Image (cartoon, rainbow, N blue to C red; front, side, top):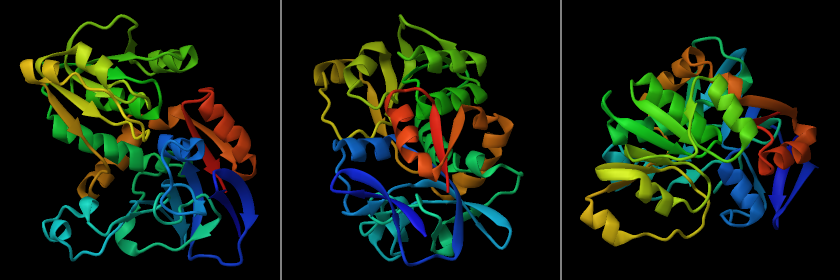
Length: 299
């Protein structure tokens, strides 16, 4: 079985002697994967098989998978907050991930595809569920105006889902190719933003100060970048303007079926570019140089 392994900061495709019960059909390259390769977000396991946005197949059925391996017994698990389990291990970050041909998974992570998605489309379930969790915490109303900072997959998915919920959305980015695609998807792009009821920071960089500059008093900022870098904060502005800053992580189980339906309804697969697993170097290069929105490896 072939697997893409990050070892001492270097990626290599290696042969492993073991195989799992689930065949990996598609696995996305996430900003967290890129940060680990760049070294700004140190992996918690070395060597590590990357990949936490993926679709697998078993007995002819296609499934998306959550990423949190949990003990079900800690304080947070008992409260139903299992994505914050104190003994949690995240697939592709703390534990070996899905950039391989086969893997084993506990059944509690799996969500069956019920709408007929392609594997590369279904691999978007994890980031889509994560965006839904962010929207849940923001609790927008249709009268709100939102700015999304970032033209990557999380930024574009955030813009499309907020628009789906009736929010007036503008997106700011720097890559013209990605902005052109966003416009084709019906997203209004802007280079000179005003101020907004809510701002989503999904740049993958240290853009918290920019988000603060564009949020209205009593507004909300949602942070989605996991770049591993420190970011400066004008705390006086946050306090004086009574701004809420919200972090959000993975989507809990009750949001995954909704995420799968939205992938189909919003045709989110239009942001995907596929690559054979053997062409991982080209895929990571295209992500690093922003030539594509979402690169998905096909083992």
